Image 1 (cartoon, one colour):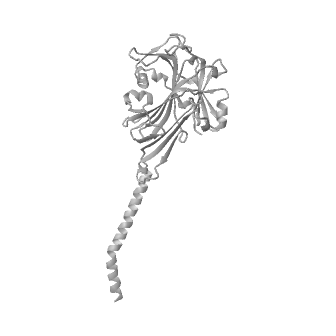
Image 2 (image 1 turned 135 degrees about the horizontal axis):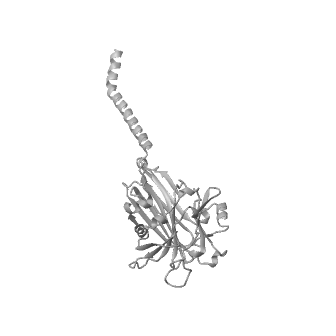
Image 3 (image 1 turned 45 degrees about the horizontal axis):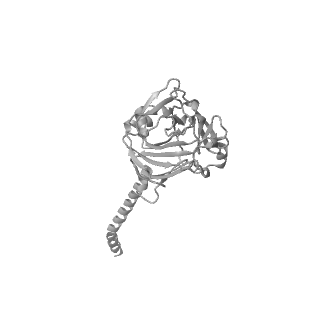
Length: 348
């Protein structure tokens, strides 16, 4: 049971169905090669809350594995750098500080950006995160929206105008993801040689899949929260160029090579810069049926380079053993005529 749950609570209303809440979700699953030949895995979550952001008091993330407070990291401060923000959203923006709202940055599209819309970037701190355990083996990370900006028009209420209102966006990272939570590794069993140099990784990523949640955990997280419906979901799998095969239950939309210089401050210094990173992008748009637009799942299978020295030594031992046996047998065959002659002479 491995579905992640994303839920919300409102500030003043106890009836979420009366308020048209929707959001856009951005997820990056990173498998970053580090200098010791291993991989570091982490998840980035970005949430756009549309129109009624000022009515939302918190967004909660249920994880089917244990999450510690020290494993959470805000990414809003990194995104306040204009170059990285423009790279992430693939558009041109202007980033401004706002007096009286130090936790917010006002993001405005540049004049030549036709499809971009303005929004507020919310920087999170330790006081925004509240982590609690959910039995039998899960955690809830509650992201509290403690304030909203008042200047520059603030976060506007929903309207019928075609021009969208300023939306609220925040982004954070979850590190130390345990194996067999959302990713699984297996040895390649049907290829004698390849299994020594490659492994298979399977990623089973699910959002708000009730059937894939522990029943008691579901009961606990939904008693005072509502599942967040999504108008659009972007999922990125970012792996090294050593990922030889990428296959999923749906084809990825596009892929691109990441520029290390631009992304270094975002992903950290422990990354092995000698190996390139490639981002594979899936995009999903929710339909108009509220019963289906809050669920999402994707399955990815990849084969990647993973040298297993124990297996290689085992193979070398087998080859050496076979060579030794064959040498002994060959020497015995060559000595057999001499042995026969010796027996004949002995019998005389």
